[in-house]
Image 1: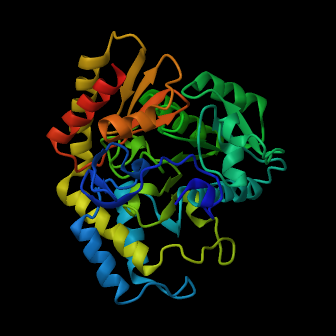
Image 2: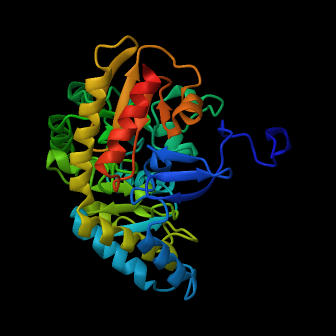
Image 3: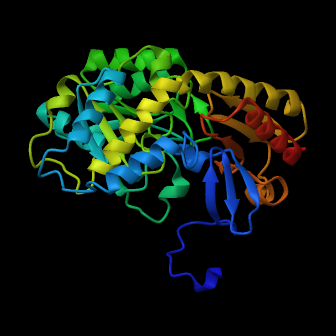
Length: 390
């Protein structure tokens, strides 16, 4: 359909290609042209497209029961909560439909925590260059003026400091007595693939313990094995008070989760929060299947190995070349920063190399391949991108 005839709101700068079938790390358009997927639906389809066990779970559950609402017990939701708490060291789970909703849940927990401590003007400490969603609260928490433009006045209640700068956190702690929580990404994905140092995350944990703040970790993009650990914060050997998940948890079936432990786990009471669709039988069963496959196949470990391979090949082919500013990453979350704005690079990658990539912050090529890629597919992603950039 021509763009001018679309009945959709123009919220996306869509590419002209449309896919009709997928398998593993491959996609095909309506003309039968094959593409190599290096973004996995933006860190969603970590098990690849049309995974047989995910497809079987969807088909079987669809023939049994899709939805009853959270007015009733949901067996698969209970199982999923237990599995996630066992993986994370958390105690309670709330299920919703997206990363933004999961982060909204975390922000509501921060507000309840502040009110319980009788903080009159509660604040959440957030980071520059961050991204937490596009609802009004998560947009205000986000550290990117470009996505906030036009939605002012932004919701108050946030103190912003530079990322990976613990001295800035300490200064804010002395300056702002109303801080009740910290919201941080282990790796800033939308911000250009910038991993936080383990020492920084450990120091954040210590400051939160000293001051009675909640440490809330946004694992929406980094969670479920993407960084080479089940969850990005685990590289630092810490456990947060609150963590949020979505994206790869459902491998394409919409689901989000907010997990909590300690005082944060008991802040909600019946009626304080809710979701019509969150954690329904279909989404919860699929998420349990995703966890089963990832655990059995040790895909977090595979992500670490494949990520090292991808970065090694990219550096061999691109480092020192004109236009390349930096190559960085952790696990299968890799960024190639360019020294200038690349004109129409995503379209060129599709047209010339049949390769799916994304750009973050205007000039960082972000690679988020499925965790089930073969070594040959990782090598091919690197080869195609090197050709594209040289």
